[in-house]
Image 1: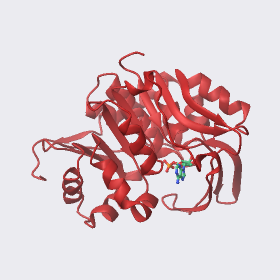
Image 2: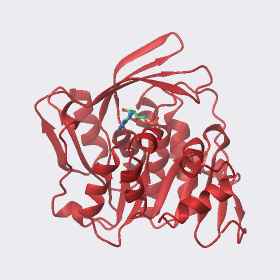
Image 3: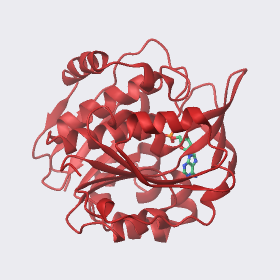
Length: 305
Ligand code: AMP
């Protein structure tokens, strides 16, 4: 195992997505899948997760292409996790149409010896109890980045707080940060979140970019890459997380991690499903990074703590 390798845990899914009058079925999706595509060109990615025996050949090919290690990818008899969502016209809101856990229902992630040694771990969106099981099998000094969703704030808050207590970086949407802290002032919300455990909070603001806060009173904001049109917002947060942790595993700064995460998210949303991330090139990602570098805004020693 290389020391810049990362472990990703999350969902691996077959998605059905409705956007306007269009309906796309059986798309390869899941939080792990998007994060793997965003990170896999930069660092060796190890996967922990589960799929059913219905997982299509194209899906297996994608995992073989972007992951360096699939030792802990379990294949079980039964149905792969599937999720359906419908977007509202503004693209910012969506309704979940169905969630079918399939083989995920009884899943407990089990890390093989090699995967217990990672220094960089991305726990993409998944039930917090499963996230915590991965944390508890990992090195105590690993840098752990966690993403979550509003569902877990409303249904499993205690379990989510237990995860948040043990991690390094929390990635969270603006609306989720407000929901969790009951504070709509983002500086104050970030302060409240840091008090729960992580030393760094990244508040994702959709088309307004993202803001990073850390416990040494640093506040850095970034805008978005100006894309022509959003085709499908699914996976934006997951591909942000994949790019973000890949940069950190390469030894880059948190500012550079914000830049790479924003670049990979912009590529993700330009096409339906994972095809944008699959088709892109390193030179396109580098071009976007250069533009995004100029939208970084650093406020050192702000008084938010
Ligand atoms: P995002 O758009 O970044 O929130 O990620 C969308 C992806 O998350 C989709 O590909 C879904 O398969 C996956 N997803 C949706 N709901 C859940 C859930 N409850 N647990 C795990 N993954 C989910």
